[in-house]
Image (cartoon, rainbow, N blue to C red; front, side, top):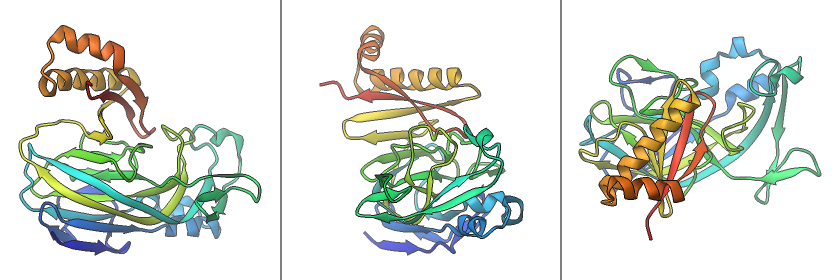
Amino acid sequence: MATYSLTKDQKAFALDASLPPVLTIEPGDTVTFETGDVAYERLSLGETVEAIGLENFNAVTGPVFVKGAQPGDALRIEILDVQVRRAWSVWLPDFGGLGKFTKTVQVREIPMRDGRAYITDTLSVPVRPMIGCIAVAPAEGKGSTYMPAYPYGGNMDLREMEAGATLYLPVQVAGGLLSLGDLHAAMGIAEPTWVSLEAAGQVTLRAHVEKGMGITMPRLRIGTSTYCLGMGETLEKAHQAALDDAFALLKSQHNMSDFDAYAYASACVDMRLGGPATGIVMAVVPDPS
């Protein structure tokens, strides 16, 4: 299997099947995606969000064409490594859950050393790199890399999207056209302020094609659990979609009857929130032991 690298300059500002791929790979190949943070650097130097352009804050690297991937298939993406090299904290007036508490744009580069990010000289948090935005291209039109998120991926801001996780994305067009960006050095579950410790860095992944998998929403596999994603106009609808998928998974993959699947879900399935760009809820289904 081959290994490739993409630079941060091989970027796009939308999820769009009309964009030419920057790389074509075989299933099982490994790709390292570099991402940048120039928008945050410009913001720190006094430029406005409007002058920089909102799309520049969530630029993605790609897209990558995976041979053999067709609609109805899924890309199985092994996240092998996530590294960050520079991080920022950004506080914008009226943006996100705590935007009402500032009247000025405040930007601070967050130093990182020895596995910790230093908010001040004495206040630090563990560095735990993850991917904010990852997606395939839609069958029609363009998808935003900012908001909303989509059944084929996007700015999902899942704390769990880190090294060691495996992501399944439902393919919409030939080759999938995979892109990613918006790395974070650290982020609370569901990105409570709508901003994380935003970062530049690189992601190494291995892409496979699961023929005819037929999923309609992303799934994650972490350890011995499957995370079924639900998306909706409200968290209630997203919760129901995730739970429905978990119920279907228990019946189809674990051969449970309706009642047994119901009882198992009642006893063991956990519900977790995804990021704020869309109503996202995940049903965490542990493998039966």
